[in-house]
Image 1 (cartoon, rainbow, N blue to C red):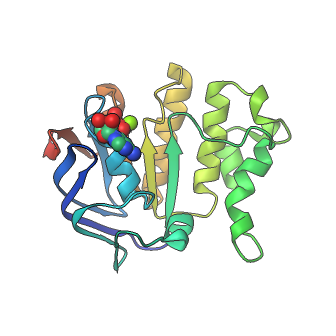
Image 2: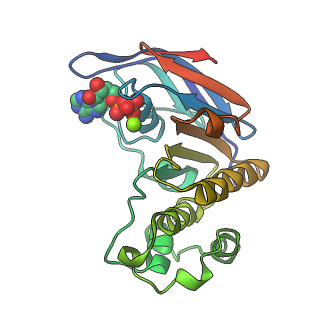
Image 3: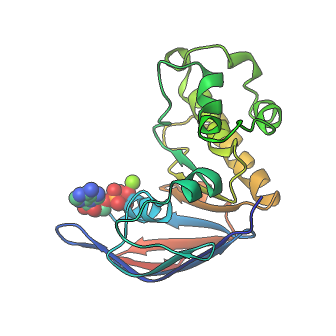
Length: 215
Ligand code: ADP
Ligand code: MG
C-alpha cells in the first residue's frame, strides 16, 4: 500500500452559491477522520473533491505529491489510491457480486485479485459471489460494495454516509471493518449523520457554513 499524504489548504467551491469557503485538512495513513454536518452543508461536495471526481475553484489540493488542478483528470490516482463507498452502494445491477468486486481489476494490466479472498472472508460474502446484485439485501449490497472499494488496496477510503441505509447489525459490520482497515494503515474519511457512528473516528470535524471545525 502506498503512503498517503493528502493536503487541502484554503479550498473553495461554489455552485450558484458558495458551498465550501475555506477548507483546511491533512490526512495520512494513520488518520481516521469523521465529518458531521447537516444536509446540504457540502459534505458530498467535499468528498467528491477529495475523491478527484469534482474540481475545486480555489485554494490548493495536493494528493500524494500531485498538485490537483481544475479540468485535469486523475484516473490512475482515483483507481489505485482511493476506495469510494457510497450510501446507495452504486453497484452494477446486471453483474454478479463477484463481477462487481473485480470490476476495478479490469482497468489494471493483468488484473490484481490478491485481496479477493481476504475481503470476501472478512465481509462474510463468500456465499453471495455468483448472485446478481438485485437479489441482495441492503446490508449485503454494502458489504459487496466495500469489497469492491478495497480490492486494489487503496491507501485512502472515502465513505459518504456508508451506513445511512443499514440496519444496526450491518452498520456494526461496516464500522468495524473500517476500523480494521485503518489499523492496516489506510487513511479513512467518513461522512455520517450519526454521532454514534462518528465516535469510531480519532478526529471528528463538523462542516458548517463552508468551514470545517474541530468538534
Ligand atoms: P450534503 O452532502 O452535505 O448534503 P452536498 O455537498 O450534496 O451536501 O450539497 C451542498 C450544496 O451544494 C447543496 O445546496 C446542493 O444543492 C449544492 N450542489 C451540490 N452539487 C451540485 C451541483 N453539481 N450543481 C449545483 N449545485 C450543487
Ligand atoms: Mg451528501
